[in-house]
Image 1 (tube, rainbow, N blue to C red):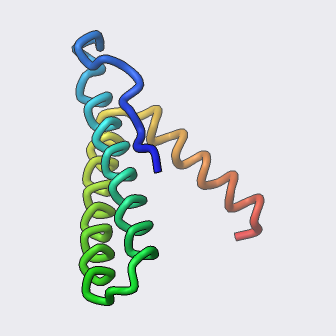
Image 2 (cartoon, one colour; image 1 turned 135 degrees about the vertical axis):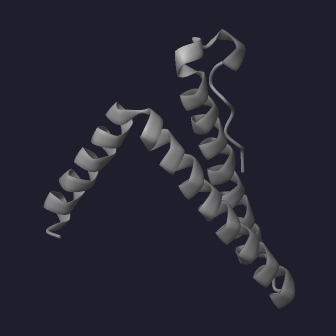
Length: 95
């Protein structure tokens, strides 16, 4: 597994966009962590290790929610596009 890399140097981001970019970088890190822990849990036969890895992955999912909440408060366009994307999928799958 290759972990995601922050695609830009945050030192070069305009001040008004910095917090949004920091949150997106945090989201990338948390999503990578979730994938890593869940993949390792699938690999092990040790039930205690699997339990701990899945518990840690669950915590990372909470972190995703925390970062996403703040990002959507700061970036109204992101919020609108997220909602539009959800509507499109609902239409596609008939929900």
